[in-house]
Length: 185
Image (tube, rainbow, N blue to C red; front, side, top):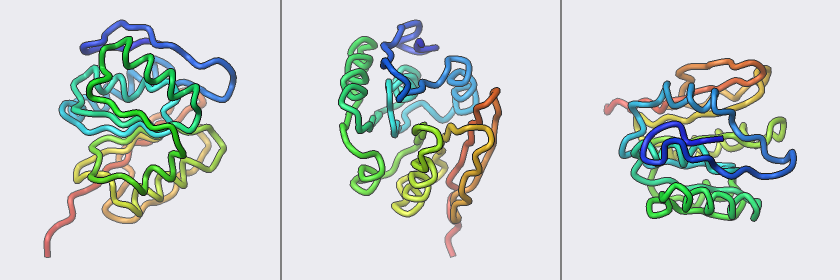
């Protein structure tokens, strides 16, 4: 697992041991960032269910303004901090050890990019998407990237949120949602 491009290009990131964490493969990560490459610069990023932190770290390496990493596992949070230090990106990062769903309700301001990659089949992805819409924390023109098993049906979100694109990589599906700008009356 490595940083693909940007200021930390080529850095190998530490990984968590065990089966609880399933890091996004480099191939899928590269495809995700090819799709959102023009949205990353100066973005405010949320890496929810951060695991190793690799999605938020990739965004920071590519010029994101800031990134917030949230994971409930202390070993994951420790690893995110180590990976940020390894890449010299800790200055623009904040790391929270806590429940990802609860953290959504405590955020001030909005995020330009939100990465969602919770444990598969946990129900957390659907809950997180619904809370993001409920708390309205995605900025106008913002994007939400959700990784799930290919056969998982994701919830329809209320306007102004909508599915923009879906990509399939073997058994994995990446769904990209956007928040449209609401027209003034």
